[in-house]
Length: 330
Image (cartoon, rainbow, N blue to C red; front, side):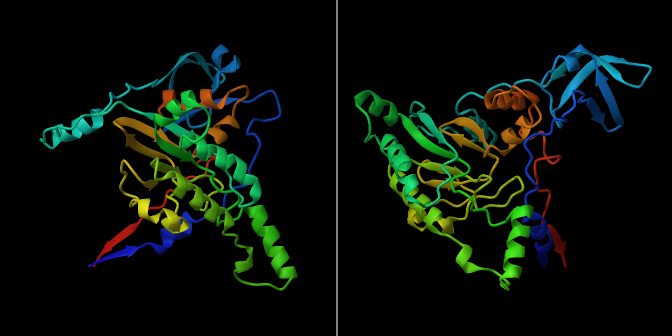
Protein backbone atom coordinates (compact mmCIF):
# COMPACT_ATOMS: atom_id res chain seq x y z
CA UNK A 1 0.00 0.00 0.00
CA UNK A 2 1.32 3.42 -0.92
CA UNK A 3 0.59 6.56 1.08
CA UNK A 4 0.79 10.01 -0.53
CA UNK A 5 1.76 12.68 1.94
CA UNK A 6 0.58 15.84 0.18
CA UNK A 7 -0.36 18.08 3.11
CA UNK A 8 3.14 19.39 3.73
CA UNK A 9 3.96 20.17 0.06
CA UNK A 10 0.66 22.00 -0.36
CA UNK A 11 1.49 24.23 2.58
CA UNK A 12 4.74 25.16 0.83
CA UNK A 13 2.99 25.50 -2.52
CA UNK A 14 0.43 28.12 -1.51
CA UNK A 15 2.58 30.93 -0.17
CA UNK A 16 2.22 34.68 -0.35
CA UNK A 17 4.19 36.63 -2.92
CA UNK A 18 7.22 38.56 -1.62
CA UNK A 19 6.97 42.37 -1.51
CA UNK A 20 7.37 43.89 -4.96
CA UNK A 21 10.36 46.09 -5.79
CA UNK A 22 10.95 48.51 -8.63
CA UNK A 23 14.63 47.60 -9.05
CA UNK A 24 17.40 45.52 -7.51
CA UNK A 25 20.14 47.92 -8.62
CA UNK A 26 21.89 49.70 -5.76
CA UNK A 27 21.51 53.50 -5.78
CA UNK A 28 25.29 53.94 -5.62
CA UNK A 29 27.46 53.82 -8.73
CA UNK A 30 29.18 50.65 -7.51
CA UNK A 31 27.38 47.39 -8.23
CA UNK A 32 30.06 44.71 -7.88
CA UNK A 33 29.65 41.51 -9.85
CA UNK A 34 30.44 38.18 -8.24
CA UNK A 35 31.20 34.85 -9.89
CA UNK A 36 30.00 31.87 -7.86
CA UNK A 37 30.43 28.12 -8.18
CA UNK A 38 30.63 25.18 -5.77
CA UNK A 39 34.08 26.28 -4.57
CA UNK A 40 33.20 29.84 -3.55
CA UNK A 41 32.86 33.40 -4.85
CA UNK A 42 35.12 35.84 -6.68
CA UNK A 43 34.62 39.55 -7.31
CA UNK A 44 34.91 40.29 -11.02
CA UNK A 45 36.71 43.30 -12.46
CA UNK A 46 37.80 44.41 -15.90
CA UNK A 47 36.51 46.42 -18.82
CA UNK A 48 33.86 43.84 -19.72
CA UNK A 49 32.26 44.31 -16.30
CA UNK A 50 32.80 48.07 -16.24
CA UNK A 51 31.37 48.59 -19.74
CA UNK A 52 27.92 47.72 -18.47
CA UNK A 53 27.37 44.32 -20.07
CA UNK A 54 23.98 43.02 -18.98
CA UNK A 55 24.40 40.14 -16.56
CA UNK A 56 21.97 39.13 -13.83
CA UNK A 57 22.04 36.79 -10.88
CA UNK A 58 21.71 33.18 -11.98
CA UNK A 59 22.92 33.53 -15.56
CA UNK A 60 25.26 30.72 -16.62
CA UNK A 61 28.51 31.68 -18.31
CA UNK A 62 32.24 30.98 -18.44
CA UNK A 63 34.82 33.69 -17.82
CA UNK A 64 38.45 33.92 -18.91
CA UNK A 65 40.88 36.01 -16.91
CA UNK A 66 43.44 36.13 -14.12
CA UNK A 67 43.19 36.30 -10.35
CA UNK A 68 44.61 39.48 -8.83
CA UNK A 69 46.57 40.01 -5.63
CA UNK A 70 43.57 41.55 -3.86
CA UNK A 71 41.51 38.40 -4.50
CA UNK A 72 39.49 39.80 -7.39
CA UNK A 73 39.30 38.21 -10.84
CA UNK A 74 40.07 40.38 -13.87
CA UNK A 75 37.91 39.27 -16.77
CA UNK A 76 39.32 39.19 -20.29
CA UNK A 77 36.43 37.45 -22.04
CA UNK A 78 33.12 35.76 -21.29
CA UNK A 79 31.21 33.01 -23.05
CA UNK A 80 27.68 31.71 -22.57
CA UNK A 81 26.12 28.55 -23.99
CA UNK A 82 24.48 30.65 -26.75
CA UNK A 83 21.52 29.69 -28.89
CA UNK A 84 20.94 25.96 -29.35
CA UNK A 85 20.09 24.37 -32.65
CA UNK A 86 16.49 25.06 -33.61
CA UNK A 87 14.67 21.75 -34.22
CA UNK A 88 13.11 21.32 -37.62
CA UNK A 89 9.37 21.14 -37.92
CA UNK A 90 7.92 17.74 -36.91
CA UNK A 91 11.37 16.67 -35.69
CA UNK A 92 10.13 15.78 -32.20
CA UNK A 93 7.23 13.71 -33.53
CA UNK A 94 9.38 11.92 -36.11
CA UNK A 95 12.03 11.14 -33.48
CA UNK A 96 9.40 9.70 -31.14
CA UNK A 97 8.06 7.48 -33.92
CA UNK A 98 11.59 6.32 -34.76
CA UNK A 99 12.30 5.40 -31.13
CA UNK A 100 8.99 3.55 -30.92
CA UNK A 101 9.81 1.81 -34.23
CA UNK A 102 6.60 3.03 -35.80
CA UNK A 103 6.07 4.35 -39.29
CA UNK A 104 4.83 7.87 -39.88
CA UNK A 105 1.08 8.01 -40.61
CA UNK A 106 0.29 8.64 -44.24
CA UNK A 107 -1.35 11.98 -43.50
CA UNK A 108 -0.64 15.17 -45.40
CA UNK A 109 0.97 17.75 -43.16
CA UNK A 110 -0.51 21.14 -43.84
CA UNK A 111 1.46 24.36 -44.06
CA UNK A 112 1.97 25.91 -40.63
CA UNK A 113 -0.36 28.73 -39.65
CA UNK A 114 0.29 31.73 -37.44
CA UNK A 115 0.09 32.15 -33.68
CA UNK A 116 -1.87 34.99 -32.12
CA UNK A 117 -0.34 35.88 -28.74
CA UNK A 118 -2.04 38.21 -26.27
CA UNK A 119 -1.25 38.99 -22.66
CA UNK A 120 -2.46 41.28 -19.92
CA UNK A 121 -6.19 41.30 -20.68
CA UNK A 122 -6.73 41.97 -16.94
CA UNK A 123 -10.50 41.70 -17.09
CA UNK A 124 -12.33 43.45 -14.27
CA UNK A 125 -15.85 42.48 -15.25
CA UNK A 126 -16.87 46.10 -15.79
CA UNK A 127 -18.12 47.64 -19.01
CA UNK A 128 -14.66 49.05 -19.71
CA UNK A 129 -13.57 45.61 -20.96
CA UNK A 130 -16.26 45.26 -23.62
CA UNK A 131 -14.83 47.43 -26.39
CA UNK A 132 -11.32 45.95 -26.41
CA UNK A 133 -12.61 42.38 -26.12
CA UNK A 134 -15.14 42.88 -28.91
CA UNK A 135 -12.46 44.28 -31.22
CA UNK A 136 -10.14 41.36 -30.46
CA UNK A 137 -12.96 38.85 -30.94
CA UNK A 138 -14.01 40.34 -34.28
CA UNK A 139 -10.44 40.36 -35.57
CA UNK A 140 -9.72 36.75 -34.57
CA UNK A 141 -12.99 35.47 -36.03
CA UNK A 142 -12.56 37.46 -39.26
CA UNK A 143 -15.53 39.78 -38.75
CA UNK A 144 -13.51 43.00 -38.65
CA UNK A 145 -11.60 45.03 -41.25
CA UNK A 146 -11.51 44.45 -44.97
CA UNK A 147 -10.56 41.57 -47.19
CA UNK A 148 -6.73 41.87 -46.79
CA UNK A 149 -6.95 41.80 -42.98
CA UNK A 150 -9.45 38.97 -43.06
CA UNK A 151 -7.04 36.96 -45.19
CA UNK A 152 -4.31 37.49 -42.58
CA UNK A 153 -6.66 36.56 -39.74
CA UNK A 154 -7.69 33.36 -41.53
CA UNK A 155 -4.09 32.12 -41.27
CA UNK A 156 -4.16 32.22 -37.45
CA UNK A 157 -4.26 28.63 -36.23
CA UNK A 158 -4.08 29.12 -32.44
CA UNK A 159 -4.55 31.81 -29.80
CA UNK A 160 -2.09 31.88 -26.90
CA UNK A 161 -3.12 33.91 -23.83
CA UNK A 162 0.12 34.42 -21.92
CA UNK A 163 -0.93 35.33 -18.40
CA UNK A 164 -2.77 38.06 -16.49
CA UNK A 165 -6.17 37.35 -18.01
CA UNK A 166 -7.93 38.55 -14.86
CA UNK A 167 -7.23 41.60 -12.73
CA UNK A 168 -6.46 41.20 -9.01
CA UNK A 169 -7.90 37.71 -8.74
CA UNK A 170 -5.06 35.89 -7.01
CA UNK A 171 -6.43 33.86 -4.07
CA UNK A 172 -3.30 34.59 -2.01
CA UNK A 173 -2.93 38.21 -0.90
CA UNK A 174 0.44 39.91 -0.74
CA UNK A 175 1.90 40.47 2.72
CA UNK A 176 0.96 44.15 2.78
CA UNK A 177 -2.58 43.49 1.52
CA UNK A 178 -3.01 40.66 4.00
CA UNK A 179 -1.93 42.85 6.93
CA UNK A 180 -4.28 45.63 5.86
CA UNK A 181 -7.15 43.19 5.36
CA UNK A 182 -6.54 41.58 8.75
CA UNK A 183 -6.51 44.95 10.49
CA UNK A 184 -9.77 45.94 8.79
CA UNK A 185 -11.52 42.70 9.73
CA UNK A 186 -10.30 42.95 13.32
CA UNK A 187 -11.60 46.50 13.54
CA UNK A 188 -15.01 45.46 12.22
CA UNK A 189 -14.99 42.28 14.35
CA UNK A 190 -15.15 40.02 11.30
CA UNK A 191 -13.42 36.65 11.43
CA UNK A 192 -12.94 33.81 8.97
CA UNK A 193 -13.56 33.92 5.22
CA UNK A 194 -15.60 36.83 3.91
CA UNK A 195 -17.60 35.48 0.96
CA UNK A 196 -18.81 38.96 0.02
CA UNK A 197 -15.26 39.95 -0.97
CA UNK A 198 -15.23 37.46 -3.87
CA UNK A 199 -16.26 38.81 -7.26
CA UNK A 200 -16.99 36.17 -9.90
CA UNK A 201 -17.74 38.67 -12.68
CA UNK A 202 -14.19 38.83 -14.18
CA UNK A 203 -13.98 35.02 -14.47
CA UNK A 204 -17.47 34.88 -15.99
CA UNK A 205 -16.52 37.54 -18.55
CA UNK A 206 -13.38 35.62 -19.51
CA UNK A 207 -15.38 32.40 -19.77
CA UNK A 208 -17.84 34.06 -22.16
CA UNK A 209 -15.01 35.55 -24.24
CA UNK A 210 -13.23 32.20 -24.60
CA UNK A 211 -16.44 30.35 -25.46
CA UNK A 212 -17.04 32.76 -28.36
CA UNK A 213 -13.57 32.11 -29.83
CA UNK A 214 -13.27 28.35 -29.28
CA UNK A 215 -15.61 27.32 -32.14
CA UNK A 216 -13.16 29.06 -34.50
CA UNK A 217 -9.74 28.76 -32.82
CA UNK A 218 -8.06 26.50 -30.25
CA UNK A 219 -6.71 28.38 -27.23
CA UNK A 220 -3.69 27.82 -25.00
CA UNK A 221 -4.16 29.55 -21.64
CA UNK A 222 -1.23 30.28 -19.31
CA UNK A 223 -1.66 31.70 -15.78
CA UNK A 224 0.03 34.92 -14.69
CA UNK A 225 0.68 37.05 -11.63
CA UNK A 226 -2.87 38.33 -11.26
CA UNK A 227 -4.62 35.06 -12.15
CA UNK A 228 -6.13 32.64 -9.59
CA UNK A 229 -3.13 30.31 -9.45
CA UNK A 230 -0.27 29.64 -7.05
CA UNK A 231 2.31 32.41 -6.75
CA UNK A 232 5.48 30.33 -7.07
CA UNK A 233 6.77 29.08 -10.40
CA UNK A 234 5.87 26.74 -11.94
CA UNK A 235 2.27 27.92 -11.76
CA UNK A 236 -0.35 25.24 -12.16
CA UNK A 237 -3.04 25.42 -14.88
CA UNK A 238 -6.15 27.49 -14.22
CA UNK A 239 -8.85 25.20 -12.90
CA UNK A 240 -11.48 24.18 -15.50
CA UNK A 241 -14.25 24.97 -13.00
CA UNK A 242 -13.58 28.65 -13.78
CA UNK A 243 -14.86 28.11 -17.33
CA UNK A 244 -18.21 26.27 -17.31
CA UNK A 245 -19.17 27.58 -20.77
CA UNK A 246 -15.92 26.22 -22.23
CA UNK A 247 -16.30 22.78 -20.68
CA UNK A 248 -17.17 21.06 -23.94
CA UNK A 249 -13.89 22.27 -25.47
CA UNK A 250 -11.69 21.70 -22.41
CA UNK A 251 -9.00 19.03 -22.45
CA UNK A 252 -7.32 17.23 -19.54
CA UNK A 253 -4.26 19.15 -18.25
CA UNK A 254 -1.95 16.34 -19.40
CA UNK A 255 -3.14 16.49 -23.00
CA UNK A 256 -2.86 19.06 -25.75
CA UNK A 257 -5.01 18.67 -28.81
CA UNK A 258 -5.41 20.47 -32.09
CA UNK A 259 -8.79 21.90 -31.15
CA UNK A 260 -9.96 22.95 -27.73
CA UNK A 261 -9.05 24.87 -24.61
CA UNK A 262 -5.64 23.87 -23.26
CA UNK A 263 -5.09 25.24 -19.76
CA UNK A 264 -1.36 24.76 -19.23
CA UNK A 265 1.34 25.51 -16.68
CA UNK A 266 3.59 28.56 -16.51
CA UNK A 267 6.29 28.07 -17.81
CA UNK A 268 5.01 25.80 -20.54
CA UNK A 269 6.62 23.81 -23.32
CA UNK A 270 4.53 22.31 -26.08
CA UNK A 271 4.31 21.29 -29.70
CA UNK A 272 2.18 23.40 -32.02
CA UNK A 273 1.79 22.18 -35.59
CA UNK A 274 5.16 20.46 -35.41
CA UNK A 275 7.04 23.44 -33.95
CA UNK A 276 8.54 23.29 -30.46
CA UNK A 277 7.23 26.24 -28.43
CA UNK A 278 8.09 27.48 -24.94
CA UNK A 279 6.20 30.25 -23.18
CA UNK A 280 5.81 31.98 -19.82
CA UNK A 281 3.47 34.44 -18.17
CA UNK A 282 6.20 37.10 -18.15
CA UNK A 283 7.26 37.04 -14.49
CA UNK A 284 10.77 35.90 -15.42
CA UNK A 285 11.20 38.79 -17.87
CA UNK A 286 9.78 41.41 -15.50
CA UNK A 287 12.05 40.26 -12.68
CA UNK A 288 15.13 40.17 -14.92
CA UNK A 289 14.53 43.77 -16.07
CA UNK A 290 14.84 44.94 -12.45
CA UNK A 291 18.54 44.02 -12.57
CA UNK A 292 19.53 45.96 -15.68
CA UNK A 293 19.10 49.37 -17.27
CA UNK A 294 18.31 50.23 -20.89
CA UNK A 295 17.33 46.67 -21.82
CA UNK A 296 14.07 45.95 -23.64
CA UNK A 297 11.90 42.91 -22.85
CA UNK A 298 12.73 41.44 -26.26
CA UNK A 299 16.46 41.74 -25.56
CA UNK A 300 15.93 40.15 -22.14
CA UNK A 301 14.18 37.16 -23.72
CA UNK A 302 17.02 36.79 -26.23
CA UNK A 303 19.57 36.79 -23.40
CA UNK A 304 17.69 34.05 -21.55
CA UNK A 305 17.77 31.94 -24.70
CA UNK A 306 21.50 32.51 -25.04
CA UNK A 307 22.04 31.60 -21.37
CA UNK A 308 19.70 28.61 -21.89
CA UNK A 309 17.99 29.46 -18.62
CA UNK A 310 14.33 30.43 -18.65
CA UNK A 311 14.28 31.91 -15.13
CA UNK A 312 17.81 32.90 -14.07
CA UNK A 313 16.70 35.07 -11.13
CA UNK A 314 14.74 32.23 -9.47
CA UNK A 315 14.73 31.49 -6.59
CA UNK A 316 16.81 34.51 -5.50
CA UNK A 317 14.18 37.15 -6.25
CA UNK A 318 11.64 35.29 -8.38
CA UNK A 319 9.42 33.06 -6.28
CA UNK A 320 9.99 29.43 -7.22
CA UNK A 321 8.34 26.32 -5.82
CA UNK A 322 10.55 23.45 -4.75
CA UNK A 323 7.91 21.24 -3.13
CA UNK A 324 7.70 17.58 -4.06
CA UNK A 325 5.21 14.87 -3.27
CA UNK A 326 6.40 12.47 -0.60
CA UNK A 327 5.67 8.81 -1.36
CA UNK A 328 5.79 6.29 1.44
CA UNK A 329 5.34 2.55 1.06
CA UNK A 330 3.75 0.39 3.74
